[in-house]
Image (cartoon, rainbow, N blue to C red; front, side):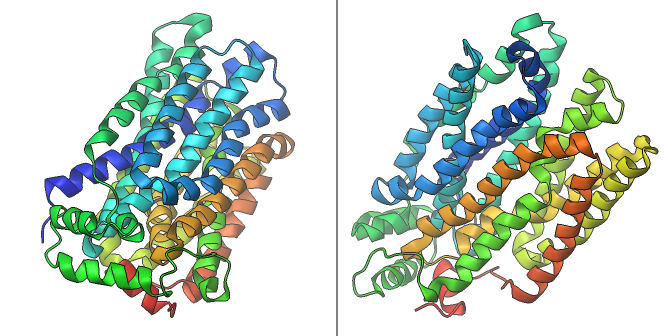
Length: 442
């Protein structure tokens, strides 16, 4: 079978949630300085302002499974699109610090929810042999959104907008958010969700339209996997038979953040400034780093279904550990700042090629149909809570010692190598139902 336009369109629209997720996450990097001045923030309260969106993502990822199961993946994404619009307008028109933090928090809810429902929808509509690449499109869009945010910050910075520049930087996200909302009216529901709700004929039609050759057989496997528990369409996640997928979701979510990726992306301009670069060159270097992120994510997507998820994680662990140790060393000896940019580029490349490309794909694969929404929420929640914690603490620790956080991140990547090597199963080329059997879950 080859990719048809129906499947591609549904994937691209669902993955747009990833674009807004990336844009919203990174756009703050170009406004940290202005926000500190406008609202008179200390390093700790700046940490809180940046993390306010992250506490929203923690809550959004925890709660997304519920509307995802009740109203369906697609319809819940529409609700999230509305939240994205409200957040962008709220940040752009914020009248004081409190209103700004509330608007960032609402945006966080949308990002957290998207990180669960976007990949889940794509995994449930995609055939096994394309699943890695199609779910990977969500990660590609996150990265594209990050690059777009850095570029938009750079471009708006050239327009000389003066004191309202930061409002434009944050408010401009309303435009793609409205587009996302409208486009969600042109895609089908998830076939696996339809089966769960007993709407088997509609599910058959969606599978047929996605170009699945043996769609009757596929439908049969989905129905069996959902009915296997004597008609229990859904059940509690925390049961001993789900031990392995729960462990995998928590491990991949934690290590993703223990690489320091988000702390580095949020405070990129500050890191460059500490190493002695000016504002505009900092903005421009951020664009370079965003571009590297995009190229290596594309590279990983092209091989994820061939090399597999596990190999990519192992390759990336080595690359991230080495480059982070280099960054820590530069901050320790306080010289050779010229190679800092190249080490950060190497780090981003290694991360994008491994953890970045794998996490959302892996989380959407390791749980059986019956608990996928809850399981994916758990993995995503772990990722966001670690993210909020690390990003809140990073500016405070980095102000004490520039090198310390990077030594820690590097050590964690060495640990990740061995954890993945000895405990992670490979999931490439298996249907979601075969994956369930491979893990011994009946």
